[in-house]
Image (cartoon, rainbow, N blue to C red):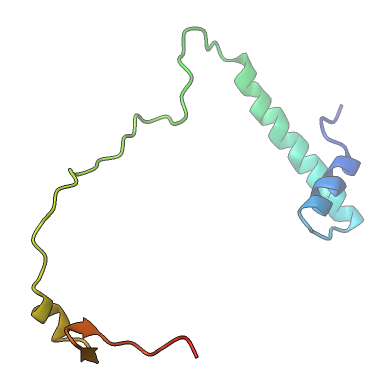
Length: 96
């Protein structure tokens, strides 16, 4: 017995704004049923005592301390500016 119907495949295709032909719907129904059958094999595994995780690896963000550091001098930053005025970058006006 199929775990997914052709009507369900067409419905999902419609939700995804995909236009599929009748023969494609038949093909996708078979392929999705095979995928579901394969995934159901996971239900046979003994997961007693296995802690649920969101990822197979224990990943953590590696962050440096947020400490102030000396940046370049204002003159050094402005020397490569295409245009400057009064010690600041001058950019074209965006307001009329």
